[in-house]
Length: 47
Image (cartoon, rainbow, N blue to C red; front, side):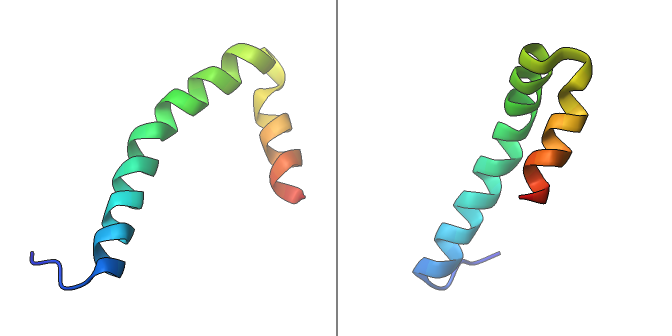
């Protein structure tokens, strides 16, 4: 797959970053909020 422009490069980099950060962020949230972690995330995403 060839990357043709800066937008594609940045988009690909952001996808790689988010995929690799997701497990770390999930672990941190679970450790901090423990049993309530899912509820906290859902409330946060509601806005």
